Length: 359
Ligand code: FES
Image: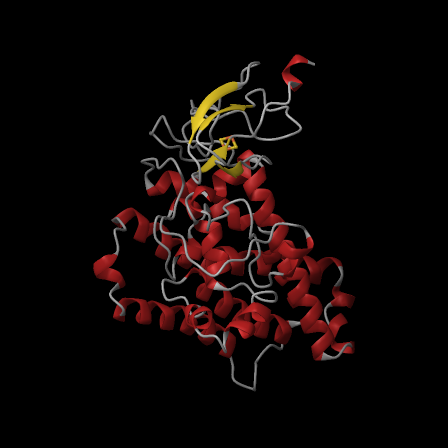
């Protein structure tokens, strides 16, 4: 595999580790260790997850694809040599990011994958290591790691090397507690620059919104902003939510007490916390009813209506929709008084009852 950038052996590996280290040191210099409420288990999962991913899972998958390719289709091992660097690089990077967008989105919509990805959203603080908080199996199934293996086998090592460096910059930057884009929102001259930039790449504000605790704060959208490097996929597939502010609270609406080993090794190790989705006895009950709910609301206050029918705080959302395709509906009270909210979840005019339960 001929992949040395600028003739320097393993430059990509040094830079990928270097970017992580640089963000880590900057965050620590900024008082991250003092301010952090992370427990030992969080550090084990994040740092350990990074080491296992970078030293075992990724190299293992890449080697497997490489060996399979060489034994089944050896004639294609230099296939990409016939194309210029730029087209190979662009195809590699765009396909990689598109695969990751859909994998990430599906991980929010399918119960099993959600349980593998859930640890990433359990983090109540952002930080340079948060990107590595997922169950080990989440990475094993990650299609773009297999894609990297394929491109390397076909002879596109240089494209992969450069792509990994750029992705690392954007992804670690978008998870960091030192959001580089804040200065752009405050400056009248720089604002147009960030408006354009955030339509292309993932900015910290865009991704922090994805990690916010609940849409109720008017800033977060945990069911949107799934992109990793480019925001174009979110715009194309209708999941983009742009804003210039950062959530006050991160994590899941219902926090659970899972040991790091359950979060990391699920489904091989399960959580002992019975309120956790990672516990074998946990199930989400249908809490919808065939009657609307009359509820007192306040003018100007935000409410989050449950659309999935699984919330324990009906008719409002409690986060039970995670791992399904449903998204709660945010609405603002127009005046003080009672409203008739749908609770059969069949209304054509959410969140209000339109008598669909009678049909
Ligand atoms: S619990 Fe959030 S939509 Fe039902």
